[in-house]
Length: 249
Image (cartoon, rainbow, N blue to C red):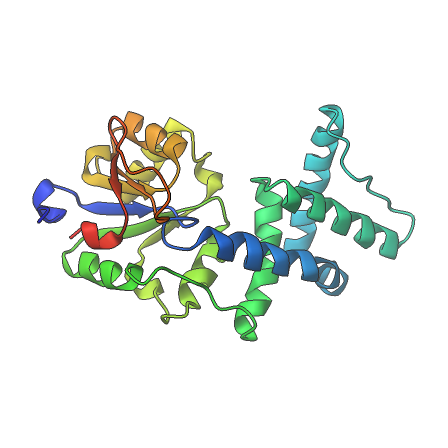
């Protein structure tokens, strides 16, 4: 049996979400579809709110960059309130279709998902081994943290409305890409500083090799989480493979 994480001088756990704690299909097929279906009505209802105005301003800035880069996004049309909302909706759909790691998009999606979680139409999926592992790590005195491209709000909503109950009682901090990109070495250094831990005291678990490479270069311990049976089974240099959190006692 593997030695406990605490015995290996690990004091903090940092977890990815998509493909690590939560099936990719839930994010892409359920959450993205829900945001796509509800974005127009949400904008029409909440357009005058300050937080939504901030998201929209960010989307407009991003749209301008997309045009400069020749990406040909759907045009933004401001002839009437309806045309503004309709064209913003098309642009949001365009970003979702490209799985764009956009701060304003992720912020807006989080607000849309909040309504779905609160009215019960959304219930987050987590793998069966996640809740027992979170409890086990907390009892061992480890700090448990999340790093995802989704907004902090979206992360908190997901873990507070899972099919296995409210798991936020186990989670200490949430980090999104406002701290830096997930493939940026500096992001992991800044997370370690925020946790007041040395990088080598943190174990980062993700299904993304690029993210793991960045975390390992920053000095963190890593595990490559491969949930699907058909995925490769051999480890790569620096990243031991796990199939379940049960392998992290």
